[in-house]
Image (cartoon, rainbow, N blue to C red; front, side, top):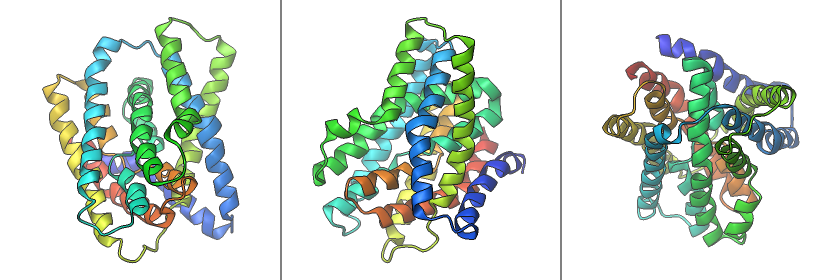
Length: 296
């Protein structure tokens, strides 16, 4: 009950985003532009600011990053295993494949801040930031293989990868941002979480694509049950504890990112199918995520 109440404001923002899209009659162009603003400006500012201002002990964070990497790669393997289970065109499969391992950073950072404040936000920022290149490499690589867009081109223009690498380099060099730029980044970062959750809700598609029920059940079970179970065990095995352990399990238990839909559409993939999988994952996470937090 406590975990459910903790998450209630964040999931309320998601539901509010879905309602605002319908009540205010805001068209697709509004939400596409908002998502672009978050993706290109606000969320990179949050990642860079978090990684730049937090003193990272890279040796201590190594088991956390290793757990996150194991979660992503295991999710990708489960995704590949789905290919013979569902009869799909190659590009449709490549689009849905990413739903087995991509994670919703907006929800992750919002919940981490609720759980452990600035320390939790920093830990999740490290994990989310370092996993961005891996997740994008896996997702873009599969789509590029079956689509018409090149892998290197997609990775080179990804603002999240640029923000992550810049923030880690800035941190490792021991630089310190002046107060005014840091305040600007903080304001942009704060806006990214609230607007990001609203955009998640606006992207929900409450009507499924015909014949996608089996895929939705499979990918949702992988993302919200199998991967958190792996993080639960592996984190302990690698000696994680406290905030880092909580962040690892939370990261693994996050629903699929709405950016999976954006990527699929931009690369000519199965946008409606991915939108439905993201919706099922997000709605189901409203039930499973409080359970995982209760077990921490």
